[in-house]
Amino acid sequence: MTAFGIRGTFLDFIDDPWKHVGREKDAARFLVDGLLVVEDGRIADFGTYDGVAARHAGLAVTTIRDRLILPGFIDGHIHFPQTRVIGAFGEHLLPWLQKWIFPEEIKYKDRAYARDGARRFFDNLLASGTTTCQAFTTSSPVATEELFDEAGRRDVRLIAGLTGIDRLAPPDYVDSADNFYRDSKRLIERYHRRGRNLYAITPRFALGASPDLLAACERLKREHPDCWVNTHISETVDECRGVQDAYPDSGDYLAVYERYGLVGPKFSGGHGVWLSDGEFRRMSESGAAVVFCPCSNLFLGSGLFRIGQATDPRHRVRMALGSDVGGGNRFSMLNVLDDAYKVGMVNNGTVAEPAEAERNRISPYRGFWSITLGAAEALYLDEMIGNFAPGKEADLVVLDWKGGPLAQSWRQSLVVDEAGPSTLEQAADLLFGLMMVGDDRAIDETWVMGRRLFKKM
Image (cartoon, rainbow, N blue to C red; front, side):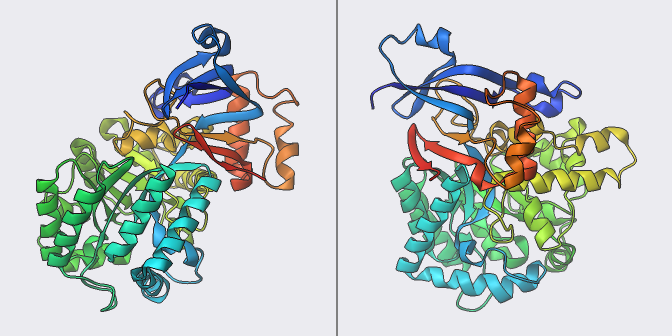
């Protein structure tokens, strides 16, 4: 690929804004007139237009005007085969799985259905500005193959793996621990680190996993230590009670995964609504991550994730955000930030410690860090993606700060005129407007590895 440049207004992050209480803007980098040089799908240079252009004589440059350019969004927890049942009505988690989810996911045994679903899934992701995701598949190897193959065709970075479940699901959905181990081995060999694909050993959740299945996961992780581990944890009260009954020798939900050697770097547990203080501390010490899924937690009535506890500097836990489609009712990470902000505001009324209440605040700096560099750090991808540092993969999203509902444009005119933002503070105000009022209509373009894969019509 010939080197080329993208000129425009850029914002990314170089640090964690939760570390900069009262001066969160110190974690961000804003260039009114910047130039990003892309070569072979990676960032070759980045900085002010005048400074970078002087180093690249004759460079072909694409200019993007009246837009904010950010690193591509990262969705840390999403279910690929639930695209069609997004927003299914009226149930809490466990009955919702039985009524809506398992019947739909069973259809993904059919290769043609899974292939069509994978296309639709990535169409939705890219139209939402998401360029990387960690996704669940189904218990069928066919679904996992089609997801990885479609990601490879589009060159999207993907963490995924065969979903392991051998109880508490319909007979034609569950599979044995032996089959899960055998199929996972084959899939790891075929897909892990092939192109931008990364493999996650994926027990669906401890309640749906027998000791034999978790032992198979332990064996896979021991044999393939470079693989990720992706699962659910402490999503609902009923689930936590069920896990306690199923694993009475484990002191809490996290201890089940610890017992099988799964908790550590590259482990992420989705939800974590009902994690105890002790579990947060142990996750912090081990290098594990939690993925906060506010849209799903509110839609299914699961509870309110304790943002202030997860971000406590005494035992900080790596944290990404996830749409959790289809429990989450939007693909857009902007909508995820909207609900995350509201969860934080409700949490503020339930905590006595002022410092914890302050940490519950999802400012635009904290929010957009959490779906770019923060998510990359949580998922151990920050050497590859997350900001515009040279050497990283050239994934980016182009935001139309006036795009969205009719009220959006007038709201944003409070912040800037037609010339657009000239300061970091103005850019942050526009981003806050996008996360609270906007939706996927604010996504103007999505670029993956230096190629534009989505353009708003």
